[in-house]
Amino acid sequence: MTGTPLHLAVALDGAGWHPAAWRAEGARPRELFTAAYWAGLVTEAERGLLDFVTFEDALGQQSAAFHRPDDRTDQIRGSLDAVLLAARLAPLTTRIGLVPTTNVTHTEPFHLAIGIATLDHASRGRAGWRPQISARAADAAHFGRRTTPQLTDDDVRDSELIAKRLRPLFDEATDVVEVARRLWDSWEDDAEIRDAATGRFIDRDKLHHIAFEGPCFSVRSPSITPRPPQGRPLVASLAHASTPYEFAARSSDIVHITPHDRAGTGTILAQVAEAVASTGRDLRERPLRTFAELLVFLDAEPGAAAHRKARLDGLDGAELGSDAKVFTGTPEDLADLLLDWRAAGLDGFRLRPGTLPHDLTAITRGLVPELQRRGAFRTAYDATTLRGHLRLSRPRSMYANAG
Image (cartoon, rainbow, N blue to C red; front, side):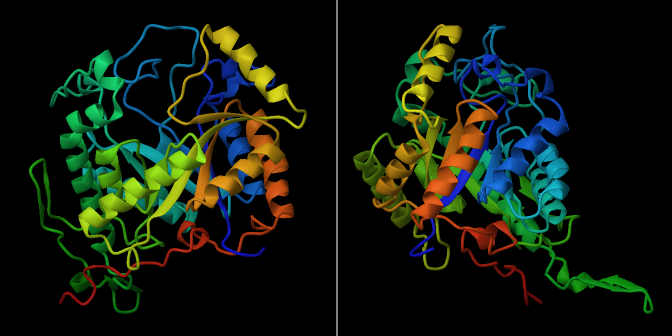
């Protein structure tokens, strides 16, 4: 392979990202809540040498509306816990990164931090984490400890307006990520002695109280989980507007963006760069990897993917809408697009398969070989951790030598 490698990830969700994907030929709706179904998907993604897979999650059932529940019964409703699912799949894989989504608005930061740290231990350094705010007022009602504003249909039509209204939640999410990183660092790498002869298991001087005080919560204790193999598991975020770009600049190692063409890619990357500059982040010390999102339908025969999508649109009663560009075509066509957009400055792409397992297999057995033929994608894994795949160094604990 010549030049900088193209990074590829896949976003796994239910039967696929089309609402009617569960009714597609080859779908397996009866297996959606089984470990075997997800194991098959993730091992296929690893077969394709992908950098990582992500798992969606939420505190409420899926809905056709971003901001409120619905009462539809013709779309998939229900899901497995993303972190627990990733932990179940960790011993079945050896190289691919596992990145679950978790809610950070109604979940304690301490629990989130030890869950992701445990996943990193279980996967031997392949864990990532996508913290996600909860914007639905209905989600808050599940807990009864706080309320969040009810967004309107007008709100969700304007990405900048909705981001502005949700800024307090993004500020809180920034604190959650900061607490998680402090907790991961609260055990120094050599805090565990494990000397049976002397009866010393840990060096207490190398466990640190993080002493975090914020407007929403405070956390003092060291983690109960030793420092993760990666030091700090990678943090990813999905961003559509200025406030999420700022969150990514402050808190993320990977930012997923949603351009719809190459020109839009350049525009968004400039906005992300502006957010990075405004936060004072030094990209030499803390690189930020940029991935564009695409929702894809792939078939070897020209026109077949568009036909499949049209059939699913008919079953759902509406044309598929998405924040990301919807691509229909052949693996060769998609390879052309990816390499063209990458030239705008992207590090990689997170692909959302329209249907599973069909479009995942088209990625691993059609797109990946095409990119390999063009010298743009790896032919074997050359790292064992997610940080290694993305060429990111392992950070030193912020508390090392604090005493």
